[in-house]
Length: 68
Image (cartoon, rainbow, N blue to C red; front, side, top):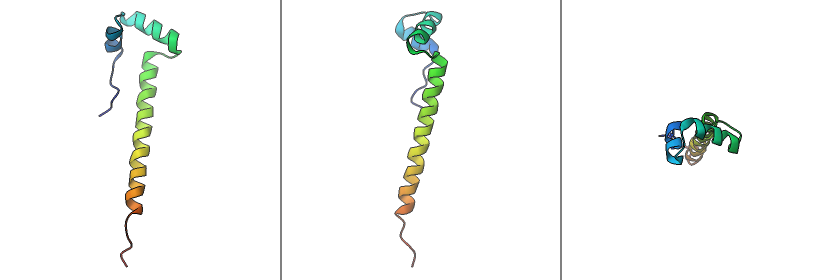
């Protein structure tokens, strides 16, 4: 399960701003839109997960002993 599944509406509600004002403030402070931030966070997490998966495969494959 992906750990970062927040939506703009939920984030705005937590910050006690309207969605439109939250979007405005978020972009002003970070330089990226909320949607762009969420997308980049998801992509970063996916890349991290793939690296961990493939590194884990390498360790288990390397620990195999020859049959002879």
